[in-house]
Image 1 (cartoon, rainbow, N blue to C red):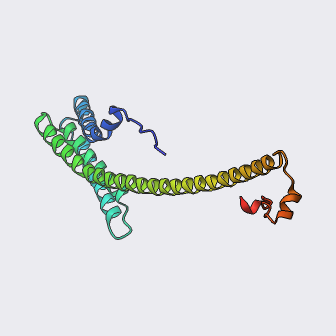
Image 2 (image 1 turned 120 degrees about the vertical axis):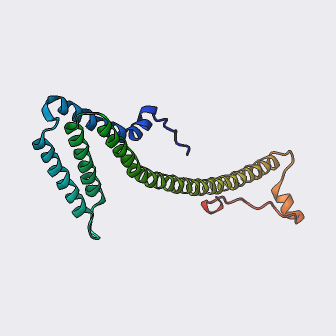
Length: 203
């Protein structure tokens, strides 16, 4: 009944928590590499990133509009828009203060969005574990009741078998006594012990 508890590695537990910071840090690093390779003060490159970021934000707005909106697609589109904007600023700016400021804001926003999904996932996990525990306890109770019932039936069968064996032993012992005459017992009017008919119904 008791299932072994699997201990998860600490890296497995820490990886989802570090994912937003790793993503924004990767975008910042790539933006600065792009800056060092000719993107600094490049209007064309900045315009391209603005167009891409605006397009991703528009796609996210359309994906989240209406009742049939897909939150996963919308979240992905908005995250891509933010990443493109951060990369564009990191590539265009000539210093680190503005890219670092945007990196902090992007990281905080990413953790704020991720925390919501983490809470939902935790609630679902706790509810599932609670339901699993309740079902396990119900099944355990049913199994205990069935085990008690089977034990009682076995004890009844053993008692019947023991009674039949003792009765047969008594009849054999009585017949083996010296001077035992069943006809003399009948003439004296004493009742004879009843014969035992053990059938499946007695079991």
